[in-house]
Length: 246
Image (cartoon, rainbow, N blue to C red; front, side, top):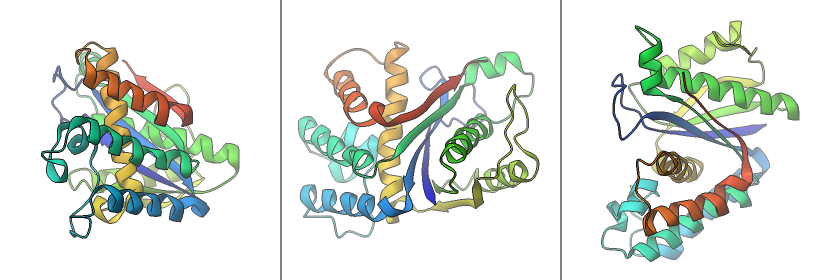
């Protein structure tokens, strides 16, 4: 059994023309059940090392956006220290021997191509499910999906997965029968789950990398730090990385 810890970036609802967030992206960390305790202990240990003064706060957690921008528990922390912690958190991917799956959809193209397009999350999720299914099939294992809670999409996401499990994915050139992903999608509060926190940090970096490559984010020390995190801590473990551009 493997667990897929999932998070998303670029969710602007049905607003497809946000120039700063043109891609709706979902990143998943697929971890063998034998490595889950290793991943969670790594996150707890990282919290104790860097946030001894507030780690016991019930709401403490690692957020990629907060580490990058110096918000929340990272307020008033120097940029170099925040990147050091970011790097430390993402080391959990290697320790857990996780496979990273990144799938997404370009929203402006979706709006141009279809008069009444599906919600971008629905499309990104379908592609994510297909990629996880292919990975599970190649390894002859089952996968349970665990996602960061998001009340506005939880019911539709569970409904879509159930439909794919019954009838296969809905559309596209290569549809998939989904029979290695079990049960439903389990949405959890991120501050209770270290796997989701690592996925959150990795999702922030993956999304930011796309914006750097598209010229939306300017070059500079901050972009170089993100590129370094991607190249060292995420890219070596990527199993799939694809955005559909309609």
